[in-house]
Amino acid sequence: MSKHSYHHLAHPPKPGAPLIFAFHGTGGDEAQFFSFARRIDPSAGIVAPKGDVDENGAARFFKRKGEGLYDMEDLPKRVGAMAALISAHANDHPTSPIYGFGYSNGANILSSVIMAWPELFDRAGLMHPMIPWAPEPVDGLQGREVFLTAGRNDPICPWSVTERLITWFDAQGAQVETLVHDGGHEIALDEYRAVTEFLKRPA
Ligand code: MLT
Image (cartoon, rainbow, N blue to C red; front, side, top):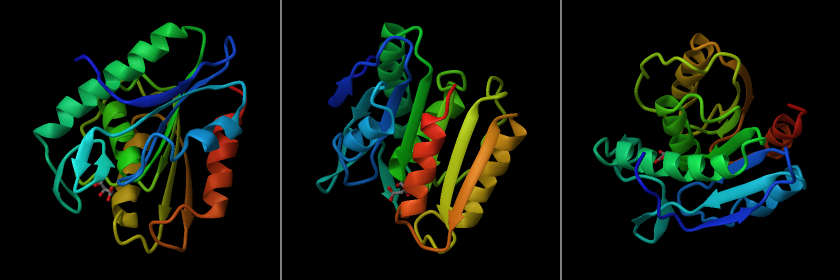
């Protein structure tokens, strides 16, 4: 895995408590979900990186050529660097379960890291992910907990595309849960609550 140089906010876990990685959406930053993650489980550690791609002033985790048109030369490099950041923090806390959650572009980098390194995360919350390809099968997701959310009328992350990702996680043997609301790309209040409950559930 390559070296990372991410600007990020971090808070250490109490011994054995989860380490939660929080990934913002396009235009967000390391602060977008840091306090939310702190409230999910005050004993948990938090690592909240800021995407190192600047798209006209908006921070992202990988480059794109248009909406849903990802730069597939850039993506694997960013995925490698992010996996290095995650591994470095995870290695510092060997008794902590590793959890992650992300929204939109944050859900997409998290999904992409999981596809390349399925054993990094014990639990992942993916809010409005948009993976515009059919991923290859992987080993190592058996029994890992994945919670996916979507908006039925999301113009950026179409429900049919999220459905394909749900089917993929299911086929890899992950323990999949979902929440679909009738709105668009926004995170609904129920969605925040459901992600909170998912991440604070005892391991
Ligand atoms: C992406 O580019 O990661 C997704 O299409 C969502 C977005 O950030 O607009």
